[in-house]
Image 1 (cartoon, rainbow, N blue to C red):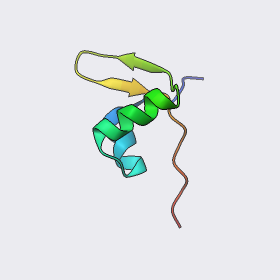
Image 2: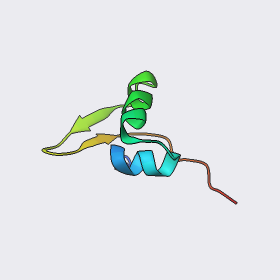
Image 3: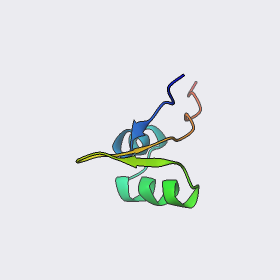
Image 4: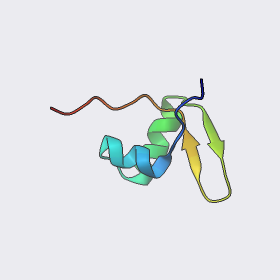
Length: 51
């Protein structure tokens, strides 16, 4: 099964953060990261579904 890598931009949007805050969170939480030409992808937990 492939892990669900997402861009930092999408992760920021999903968690209601700015991109710099999302990058800081990913670093602080030690989420695995990979780097592409113009994107950083993270293996972040899925945000809780909103009711």
